[in-house]
Length: 266
Ligand SMILES: NC(=O)c1ccc[n+]([C@@H]2O[C@H](COP(=O)([O-])OP(=O)(O)OC[C@H]3O[C@@H](n4cnc5c(N)ncnc54)[C@H](O)[C@@H]3O)[C@@H](O)[C@H]2O)c1
Image 1: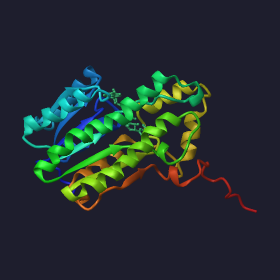
Image 2: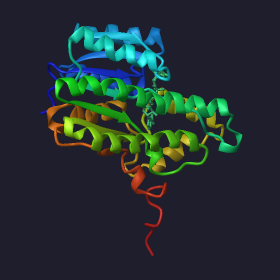
Image 3: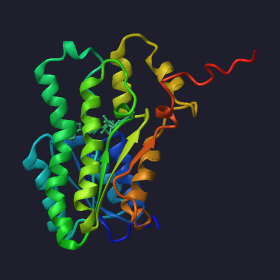
Image 4: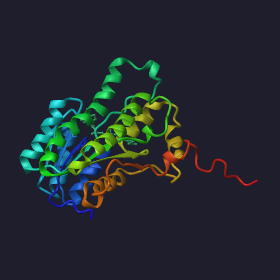
């Protein structure tokens, strides 16, 4: 039920982290994948590695904040494979960590462009293909941030909340065409993005605090998001539509408390 043989997928932001892990999980499950990233050097490197598993993997450079570039990735996939079954709108930037009152309009528009408009472009240009071929799976990468606030991240959280809302709307609107739209909300995952946020924080305590926020006692690995994406892309997920998967070790079921608080004996 998690076999992706003969499926064609586009994944954005595949040069590192979660996007790379999703693309790798897809290839390992038999899919033909069009990889995409703004970072050409790393993007090509990941592509070369995955081509050793499946020669039907290709890389197309795209800045997802630019509609024409996202459209080009999707059209390249359709032209090359004559179909498209899955799109993963994953690429995003972590702009934040400071009060919204200090945020420049430039940063606001940058985070909206790379994190939210990007998802709109990906959906807008893949849905017509999915309609034509009788269905498809859209997987949007949201965040735990959309569910539980963390000071300093209002703009980033706004993009992720927007993604979950848009996902539900699209699931309703295009479900009748057998187009399933779902999102994944990762907790803290061991990627470059988190390393960047931790190093920019300056308190020296953020990583320990992040660990403490996850009841499962650790942060996640990118492959654990890859596994959920494979399910959503596969026929195993055929009845799953409009869902948001919190793959977060329990982070968002707690009020950002450290595990153990309130559990001391009398
Ligand atoms: N790592 C986490 O803890 C975490 C938690 C929740 C949600 N997420 C989400 O998961 C997704 C992947 O994050 P990650 O942790 O793997 O980050 P990452 O920084 O490791 O990787 C992001 C990739 O996206 C690319 N990218 C960034 N902006 C782009 C643009 N405008 N156009 C094209 N490519 C671009 C980068 O070059 C990079 O390869 C993002 O949507 C992020 O918001 C991550």
